[in-house]
Length: 267
Ligand SMILES: [Zn+2]
Image 1 (cartoon, rainbow, N blue to C red):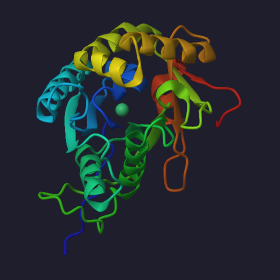
Image 2: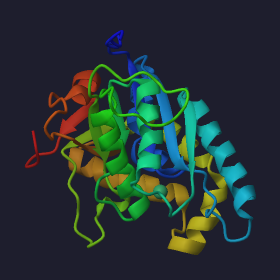
Image 3: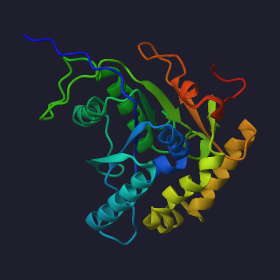
Image 4: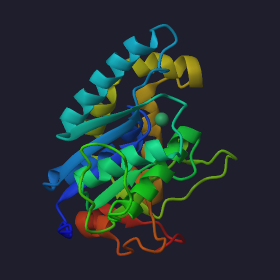
């Protein structure tokens, strides 16, 4: 039997987040910097956004949210995938892991951004766990996803970074400190434009979470993290340093002085 050829590292970055507008809140500034440096970007969302409305039917709001996410990805210059799960129904199971694994194999990223493993809701945390295992397992030829046609296994485990939880706290209200803060000051206006693509969500977040101003939330969070970094606006990350994963800090290597190490956290 022929052995599969080992795939090389390409300049591709993958962002995997649960819902259509999550990436805009916690990672879009960093992705804009990476786009400006010539990296090829692929953004993926786990769900089709079927619960994101108090009045539109699931199929209607799903269509609207997909269009909004596509518009935002276009501003970033990224290709885009929706993995078609349902809101509040992202499960860590073989079927869903197979989808995320195929995504990682198809995109073959050198670096992956995803949710914090502890966040304010389970959809985010499950997405984080799925991304972690998909990054770890994508190079194992004996892991069969069952998807046809199947993408080739990757040749390496990508660098994995977890964005700060939405709101910066876990479910017990404890702050989750980022070890790296990316200065997003000079891309912040573009990040706001990306977020503004998600027009349907302003109304939903007001009704469901009492979030009165969609874009103000991003500004406030970016300012908060900016204060930690000593700059106007920032967004935070932690690197996955578990066994098997590369532990050199590729994000800092790429973005250089845009990255500020948070004192007292991991190096
Ligand atoms: Zn979300």
